[in-house]
Length: 174
Image 1 (cartoon, rainbow, N blue to C red):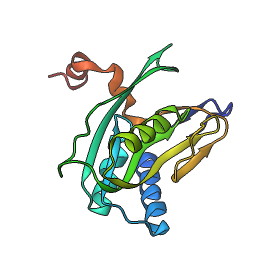
Image 2 (image 1 turned 180 degrees about the vertical axis):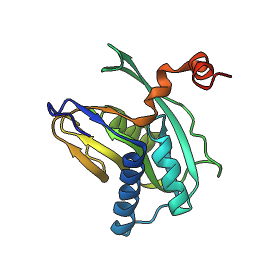
Image 3 (image 1 turned 30 degrees about the vertical axis):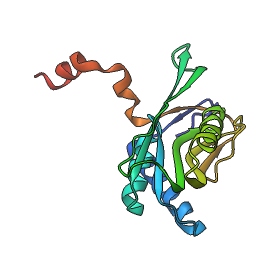
Image 4 (image 1 turned 120 degrees about the horizontal axis):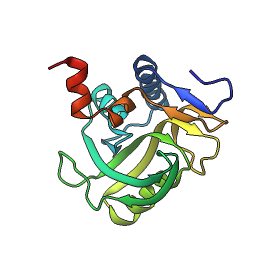
């Protein structure tokens, strides 16, 4: 649900899964086939896992992190992992790169450049995201929703960011 001022988008689990399924449909209808899904941790892990199951393709994982200030609303320095975790040796062939969103586009652009320069066995690389914000300088090959007002996206699992084990104990009175 987008707030009236367009500054916040609240997404339920059902909406999140529906959007991920719509992303799968877009990829499928394009007719493009791929060998591996490479998800960017953490945001791309959930859609990457779902797409991996739908397409029955191996899931590789690459960690990225931008240090964020002001309660996670300001992007800072980007770190990209030096290694990719994959069940089939080195990542190769046609790869679908998956993340949850193209915010500024900086992360996806940097990762794609790094992959092109350092992973010569990748023969074709396409990208897929659930959301693309209006301010993004990156356009994914596949995207479900375009958000021209650049809202802050409140994803359903973010409640765990501030939960911690003690709050779980309290919730479940264990």
